Length: 215
Image (cartoon, rainbow, N blue to C red):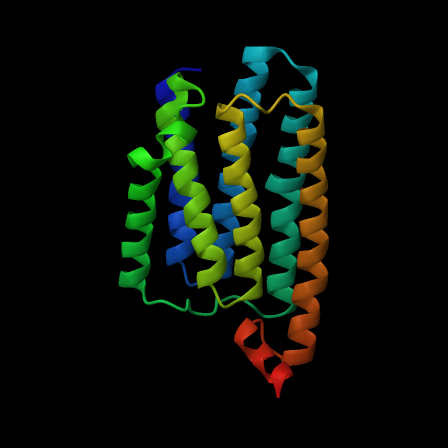
């Protein structure tokens, strides 16, 4: 695939993270995560076409099955069963959130991170965007008050890290691939159990309600 098309795909992942910051609906956040994961599947497939590594083709299959299809189905079921259509507000206001996103994006493209983004010189722009996505996903984790949003943020962080790994040329490591699959299964189980328990005991998915545990 051409470098311009690859950059377009990485830009989509970046934009889905921005959407997850802006949306007030859990359904939209799940759709954004699904789109993000589908783009990751395409990037794995592009890597397979370049390397002809069969194990990467397995990653294409498992990412498509688990992250694009099964994981969104799990989250949508949790939303429906626990009446979590609307996401809890963020800790920071929308204007401040957008400013921080812009600052994090600028940081990822700054000279301080050039040694990291030049691991593969031809992929410097792609690695910079992937690094921006990592920073924004980390910010999303700490800025959201709602459990489903936080878990989606962690999975999005993983997607962003995997994208960085792909363009850094490290995706062919069998141990890394096994680790990625393990993380997918673990986080889906955590999401199912954690969200259900929080809603059952607190009647809300807002993590700030857990401050009562300190009383």
